[in-house]
Length: 155
Image (tube, rainbow, N blue to C red; front, side, top):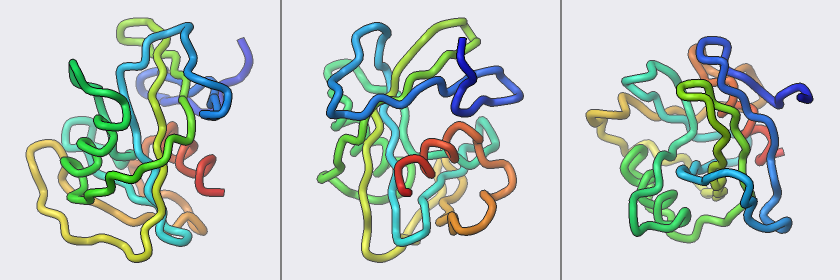
């Protein structure tokens, strides 16, 4: 197996590939999740997940009867307060996960906003939002896989 693009040293999970949307939907593994990369200039939106105690991209599971785009819009709003229905599909992130061992994809959507959104109320899942200035290091406790995906899509 070739070297992953990024991995989580705590769980062993790995980002093994990014498939651009122009190549079509991969069909060699399920796609149960959608993530969103929101950019404002050099800043990238991260959310602090209370359960995992880390900064990560907004996103999550695709609910039954929901498509990836709908899930991305819903999750972004639930986790950050942002309503951006015009998200663009960038592609698909391929993950090798460890608990349980499996391969999955997440649909990755992107958006650029003209101003940083700070109107956020903490909730049961998300403690805070942060606009990371990508010209500097990621915030302490940032998920390496999500940081790698974010940088891949904003540069």
